[in-house]
Amino acid sequence: MSPLNLLPGAINELIVTVTDTHRLTKADRYGMMAAILDESISEEERGSLDRLIRSLIKGRIQVTDELSIVL
Image (cartoon, rainbow, N blue to C red; front, side, top):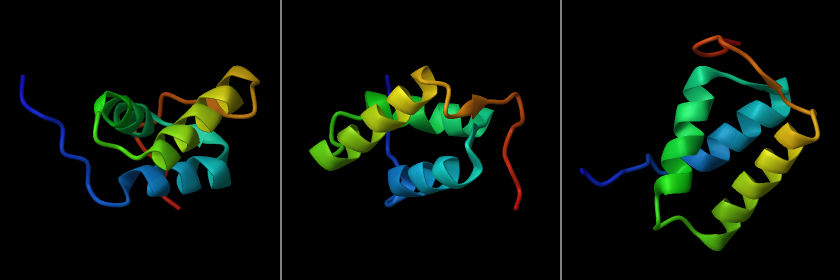
């Protein structure tokens, strides 16, 4: 299995985009999956992902079938 290599700032960009739009697209979900599987992310980044997941569970974020949101 090849190692995951996230782009620098990818997690922060994901969090900002989802927070602004209140939507989680397919591309966002794949980015989240890659970030969660990346063992080298910082505790701060992991905490941000945990907060995003809690927002999903509470229904504050809508999951969409769109590939991405173009603003």
